[in-house]
Structures are given as structure tokens and as C-alpha cells.
Length: 107
Image (cartoon, rainbow, N blue to C red; front, side, top):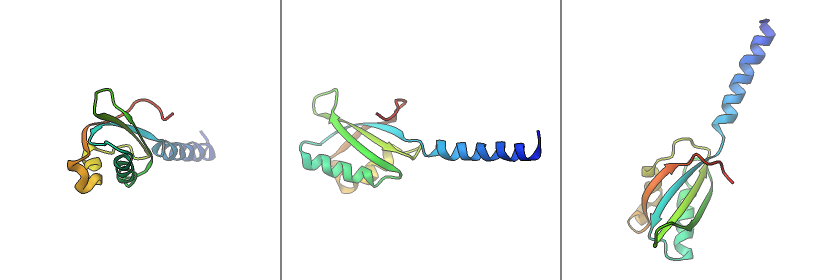
């Protein structure tokens, strides 16, 4: 391999890694405590402050009284603890029961 071809291959490897690092990741949370539009607005505003978050979607959950929250972020490692911390004093009202990284792409 010639030197320019090697440099080009190395450069494309770094660029590809940088692009992949910014790919959106979805996190799915199961929560309780949201009973009105104001509650949903508060949770959305709180989660939007998390690193790289671009979208928060809240829909009714599978179980009565639960909500399914989908958080889209460029961060590959948001945790339940970070989500709870983002809720601040409201973490005792809006309870995050489950938090997992989704294998499904963003729709």
C-alpha cells in the first residue's frame, strides 16, 4: 500500500468512527407518576438536559398507570441514575422503574 493510500485509509477510519459516535441512541424508560400534561412537560424538560438528548417522547405504558418514555441521545451510555438525577427533587414523584438502551433505530 502506498503512503497516500495508507493515509487516506487511516483518515477514513477516524472519520467513520467520529460519525458513528454521534449516531442517535434510544433509551426506553418505564415510569410512573405522570398524570397530566404538566407532568409530561416537566419530565421532558428534565431529560432534555441530559447529555446529547435531542428528543423525548412519552406515551402510555403497557401496564395501567405507567408511561413509556423514549429518550433519543447521541450519548452511548446514559444511565438510569443520570435520568433520576436530572429529575432532581421531582424524582420522588416521577419514578423511573426501568431504563434500558434500545436496539431499535430511531423512527
